[in-house]
Length: 601
Image (cartoon, rainbow, N blue to C red; front, side, top):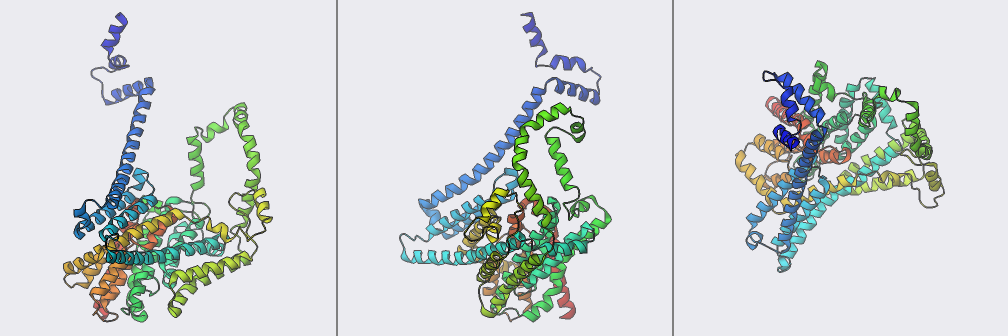
């Protein structure tokens, strides 16, 4: 009983000792020291606090995920049961619901890093829900005319989305095939030679190359090639993402002044709104400013030595500046051993720790040796690698040529390019395995009697289908907004707000294209200003603003979405790191264009 009374007087565990250790006149340092003593005396309390904090974060993520999924699923169920009828039958209410669903979907993409949700399934769920809610408004089961209208909208949406996806898939296949045969070794060697050991030259070199390439072929293919080059040249993930973001700016700006460089510019060109000569004359300098001005600012900040820019321009062509060493040191610290501790460790303990891994090391020895040999061969320029690169580029350049001379859709030209690339590389000696195949697996491939499995077939296995599905979902969602007439109504409201000012109209159009697809917005502009003459400044501003404005957000352009899917860039990171530079790119291009018009009329 005396012991229980003493414990009751002390209160919580350690309170008596802590109170006695802190005098009444103790300062902050004394109290902090005593608190440290208390933490050392009660490690269980600290572990409980950490566990509670982790549990709270997990609960918040789980609730956020569950809220988004429940909302989409609930709207899908309401669409299936056609309830409530006052929402289903009212066109205005349907547009409000579709807009709300689209905003919720974009919000989940924006906070994907915080809630730990994969953006691809959310986009697919959002697209399916939006189209289901849109479909029931036509009442296809009760009205034959409604069923016809629904199928017309679905066919148009499928044509728009399918043409882009069918272009993106073979384009990625061609580029991946070139990389599988190490065709980029020549380009990589040339870039390293131009860099001359200056790592800060990587970004301007790749972005300048992308700007020119996007005007010759298109901004999507140029982005794919540039991202693949960056992966071969830099292992510093942060710097590679920064370079990739600037590549998006350069690709979109380079495609704005060429009739075949961007889908919106091509739309204006095909419908007779712009000509090649006038577009190149008036948009080359603004596009060059929009694509390269952010690079110059970044380079100048790097020369001034600011910490942020020094981190941004840090890279190394042979593995990043200390990237590999930092990863190794980090992994050792996570495993509980520093380099010094590992050297001073007892030899008997080392042997004991290595014993369980001896068998595994012997099993992986052959694979490691094979991988090392393949890595030594990669990067060495040979005639076969140069030939594969030349043939691949020739096939890619064939796409705009077929489009100009035969009006063949670009996706068919790119499918043709992939087929030709496939047949050629199957007849070449296959490259050695460089991703960890063992000799046994290679022997199986050698005895394979069917078509070659280590060429384009192996390259196609490296394609990121999750990114492609995300791309499909967001395009389908935008097409649902377009079919509901939301984008056209928005464009009409823009015209009313701008009151006839082409610069203000195109500025708002470009900013709006960062959130939704610029194709329906440009098409709405064409329909509303069909009386404007060919090569009118309005059409040139539309081409420039729609092309460069989509760079402000990663989901605003095909190039940005491709960067997200190929290199794992998140929406939040892009908005924070690249968004301000994209705004500078956008407004500087418009400023230079207006300055040209003032000076040269």
